[in-house]
Image (tube, rainbow, N blue to C red; front, side):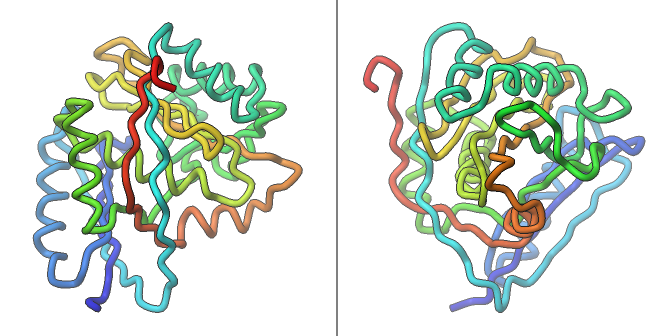
Length: 259
């Protein structure tokens, strides 16, 4: 079996994050994938970056965790109400959900900008637990297994997904939902004209929610909700940053009236 590598891209301008992406690929595909990540950074709607960082890291010696994707739920109703309701089903208090939603849509960093990573939030109290409120928590080393194309492409076609947002978000949400101490996740893209977000957990799946913000809004981000009573920060960060995850399996799509 070919050695696998994590290839990551981060683009920034004026010290602010513009875009990022990651792939897990065999060594023979590193050059091609790195070029595609650079092209993605250079053509992002947030504008041309001043700096692009490409990091290629061998995954040799690491056990790769293989996970089945969360089921996908397509709801109908008022977007923010749906998000708070779905988070509550997973065990997040209304206070914590509303705090995270407000922070994401107003700039969750100390300077009032988008964070580079995610907020880490006590699901019961809403207390923020991330050690660095500028950097936040990042989920790395996650992608779809190569053979999963047969599963993810039909789901993308069904949902009319013309960009990689959906497949990348579902893979990341699947990894995050399986983190030690995880309760749920809330995400809204920081791309100005991509207004879809999601709430996700192992309890109910990945709830894809349209119109989570106004088109043109540059705010966005994510919040990872955890059970503070069953939570070890060091183990959580180690899993999110270092445990390689490949997602594979049937992508079940359920529309609200079919649940």
